[in-house]
Image (tube, rainbow, N blue to C red; front, top):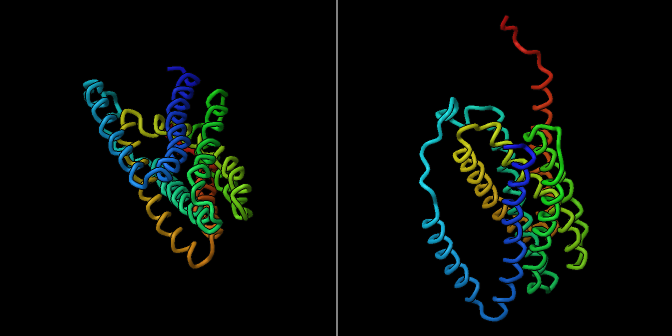
Length: 262
């Protein structure tokens, strides 16, 4: 498939997920205001319906063939580096999510917490649409690391927010980096795990989930002991350090002399 069309397909996948992240927090806030149990009921019904539809429409797929089909995705150092950055990305998302909720509670605007989280997802939608429509010369692994680094830097201004009216647009801007990172991640897996994209994606999503759980746990403690801005500061450092280190490693690897096989 043409690289541009593939990027647009990945942008569409990212867009669908982010639209859900925009709608779900806002809808959850409205449902919770109506009845505390209703968001859980809606999630339960939606999960069952989605599982039934997916099971009914899923095609029968055999094991992929090709010269790389039996290669373990994590055999590649570049793939392990990407996995480590994905853990940091998940931790950042967990830190930011809990920090937003804690800030909303402290400011007395808990009912608007879902809309604040939706602002971040809306920024991701906008960033993904912009990113997916353009041609890029850099390899996807490098684009992923650069997008993650941009996201880390965009999280830093969240420390300045002292009310929801300031936090919402800052979250919108921060979210602009997440969509491009997701799209580039999908493309990078095609390069780093050819023939094993599904397994590679499983490793990455698991890494992000572990990071998110750890970040959420750390954010709760940091918010109580250090204030609502602390998780944002931690998120910036946790994401920026491994992303910058990975970019430096990538540059050093590219400049290293190639072994003479002649």
